[in-house]
Amino acid sequence: MNRRPVIIDTDPGIDDAMAIMMMQASGRFDIRGITAVHGNVSLEHTSGNALFLSELYAIDCPVALGAKNALIVSLAKAESIHGRNGLGGFVYLKPEKKFHNKYAWDLIYDAALECEGELELFAIGPLTNIAIAVLKYPGLKELIKNIVIMAGAAHSGNVSTYAEFNVWQDPHAASIVLDFGFRKLTMVDLDCCCSGYLTDNEADKLLLLKSDIGPLFESIRFYQRKLQRELDSRYAGSAEFQPNRCIYCDAVAAAVMIEPEITVTRPYHVFIETQSVLNFGQTVVDWNGRFNQRPNAALAGNVDRDRFTKLFFDSLDYYDGERTVRFDG
Image (cartoon, rainbow, N blue to C red; front, top):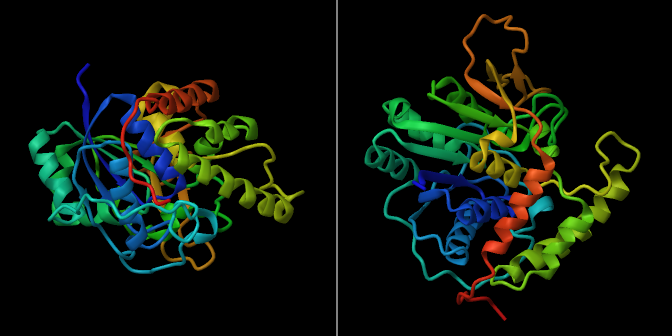
């Protein structure tokens, strides 16, 4: 099977770590680079995590530094969800691998030229790197075959009433990317991600891994169980309360990237609210075509949860082989 060339743009992040794992384990991709961006935590941590994860998952590709801040408005990070270092406090030795000598946007463009129109982008953080790339290199429009983004909330948000975190972190960048005119852009929004949950019992299987990735995933699961107890007590009785559900948004986006048939997409014109104080970062879907604009995104519907869970755990099984990975302690 010919592997699809791809660059992963990411802000690792607990669920980013899972998504990158799934992409590598699928065997379907020739990962041409990992580009780090600010988001869940600061770039200092997301970039270091990207280096670590590329070593942990044995991904032989360059890792490039990207944007430290949003294009215009910098907002609070998500340390309360992902921990101070982004990986739930998991401690690892400084990776031996070094950063690529070019920035994220330049690496993306170089890879796009090399792949002659076949390169795909998988963007699971704020879209700042991608926005800078398309502003600097307008010719990317014809060079990128496909882009899948974990972004947006067609209905209610997770960081404000209407805003989803990745878009809220840099709505101006998201607006640029949506308006750029990519040949194919799939938006895996919050509603789609919530359909691909794991139950608590399923997620507890992360405590039983015997492979090299086991220590990381065990630490993540213990961290999230503690966090979930705090969230349950805070949101019990509210519409946001979803007991016995563990939602890893970027892992669901990875499943859509790996197996597009896991969901059904529909074309819509989507734009991002960047002016309103109350609705800053809202994803606005023109459901009924009232703006008379051509569709710029394929919005993913619910995923097949059974297929998602199988794909997720099959990916974990991929790492049962022996490799040497350097952990602290």
